[in-house]
Length: 269
Image 1 (cartoon, rainbow, N blue to C red):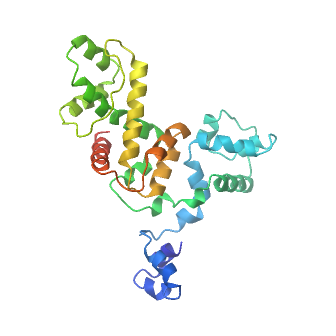
Image 2 (cartoon, rainbow, N blue to C red):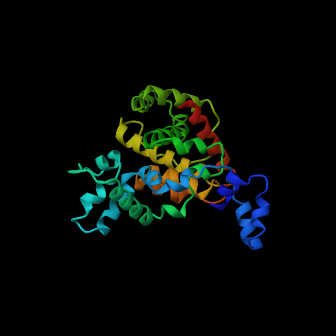
């Protein structure tokens, strides 16, 4: 908060303010990689941050409220979150009551422990914070095609290839061809699919999970709050996969390759 205020009101002479702090605290302030001068993300953080959270992260919190109050709590959510929780409000909450409930949920989700998206360090992957759930899931589906390409290279039977390609959208089939033209730099476990059978549902599930694993590893080394925001845009199951794969430091000879695959796909999609 202090770093944002310095950026806004005294950007050229921040040291003149931090000199009144203990040396350790002054250094902590100046080490913040925040260039923003906008106070809005802090002032409106509870409402804005909560609105971006997938409803599945909110669902367990409802049990902490008396059953009689749960409809009131649900009424403070966004229309999309209410639809996800299969709730239709019978009445409209006052603005004061809605803000109060949103603040309660905000605290229980520990959102205050994480920087607003606007204050995160800018990287090549920063645009992902503007993507919605559907876009990120599509990204994962396409990332999984790199794993599929590894297996397709070993298949020579045309009928077996047809079984696989018939399960893909034209756009996915096009990107799979792009993957096949590239040399795979990572060795990944086999998908466990049977190309002699046309099992589209199983194939899509396996590809999607592999894509999530690649995405999680590609984000290693990013700011921890960056991955937190991405994970909470998704449902709890998928979000927890990303959080589990994430590490504070890049994975040698892995993260760099996967990050480039993500960047390529961001442009392609």
